[in-house]
Amino acid sequence: MQWLLGDGGLYPIGEDWGTTKGEAHKLVVLGAEAYCPQQAGRVKAELRRSGGY
Image (cartoon, rainbow, N blue to C red):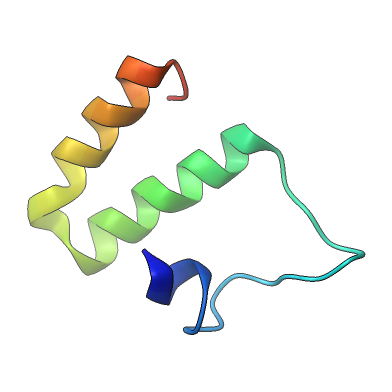
């Protein structure tokens, strides 16, 4: 996840850019499905338990 949201440069950051938590959760799910599909189910389950997905 650090690569997706950090050093990978796939997700814009900065003072004048942002996203809602729900949209961020969707991004994490899409990233898990694309880059580590074997963990996508676990990611979705954790987000569901937290009420975020």
